[in-house]
Amino acid sequence: MRIVDAFRVVRYSPNMQLLSGKDAANHITGIIHPKYQVHGFSVHLTVRKIYAIDPVGKLDFGGGEYVPAGRLPIAPCQLRPEDNYLWWELDKDCYFVECNETLNLAADQVALIEPEDRLLRAGAWHAPIFVRGHVDPVELLLTVGVLQLRVKENARIARVRLFSIGEMMKSAGRPRKSSSAKPKGSKAK
Image 1 (cartoon, rainbow, N blue to C red):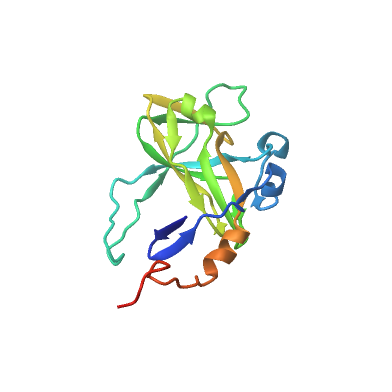
Image 2: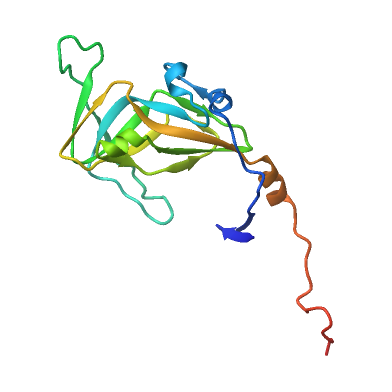
């Protein structure tokens, strides 16, 4: 199967391999508690900071007028005197989340970051995204759909799944043999 993506031919490869959580963890720094974050085929990402979004960003075709939306830090608060960790109280809106973890991916690896199931069930989400290379810090655009969401410091908010695409990279870099436009058995005029 051939797919054209941004004017490059991309071929499907059955050799794309999902790495185990333990192998994926070798490419992630800042893991707080491996026992609870590293799973069979994924690693949890945790909340370090949350920012409100400054309401103005700009996006144009060429990038000359691009301005990212600003970030306004939100201070977490203590809900109960016995709490060792603080909480963010988020209203229905969008927020930037900075994770504790950093990704250090090899050239033949791609990571899928997807929302944690409990985040979805609590009424919030972020878009699943694919990332490559060095990602420091991991940042997510969180959408809160409920009237209020409380997020505790270091809460597990997302899962990262790491794929090796080594064979795909090799085949995508090779030139394809040209084929004749004429079907076999046709006569040239």
